Length: 319
Image 1: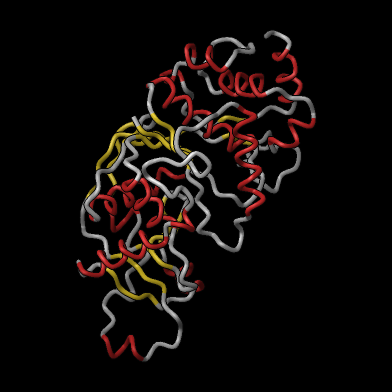
Image 2: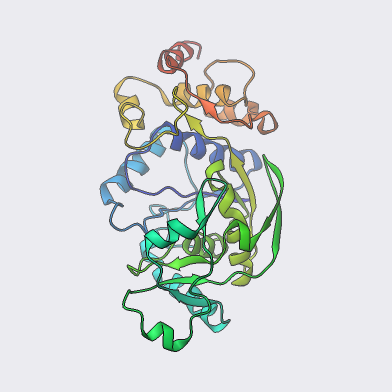
């Protein structure tokens, strides 16, 4: 097994990030596999070097160690996306050679007005620019983004938590952007190229990315790679039922460390809250690997109660 944790350095990691990082680490450690840490920093405006440094420090403090990554190296490097642009350019050239790439001149306002939402996560493109002639393209004044044309095909896969998924590409994603109008590579392209090139066999990530999986499988296979097995896990929410955000105060690993929270208490609490452990008690990392049961993982999103920090403090006393 080769798994990966692939965070974006756009802020300090918080409890929600810890939840998915812990499960990705746990899946690999229970299987005796290799864990890859990849820094997904293609959002050049928001990604910061200071957050990369903090990320490595926070994961190390948590004990969620990796086998290959930007600091340790490995056979599939570089492990920072801004150092992998040549791979993405080659993938675009391959898609163009297959006749699948075309420019899109649609404004954001048009896309929101005519696109059909899919699963509440993204808007499905209506294919407006796919049929433009060379003459029509030449009359455009807006710098285009670049889209890949998907076939009328159903992608079927079995998710590790949510079971069989049958996704008809024109309806679940439509022709999607692989390079933005500002010349930055799109997430869907970069993650697909990297997962294939790094020989990732298992991807564990949040349920919010389940709707992106079919297009990534298709893209990986179209580029000649083998798609990994996917496991999407329920999201960690605040007491109000809102998804945790890097903008929220008091939930970053840094702030928790400052309050005296221990790493093993935090991870043990999250494992219990998510259903992986039957009892709320503090365990070592080795015991977490031995005792956590993935088959007992909850399927519904997990809400942090108002007093969750005091509960974490309480279980730290049981170690």
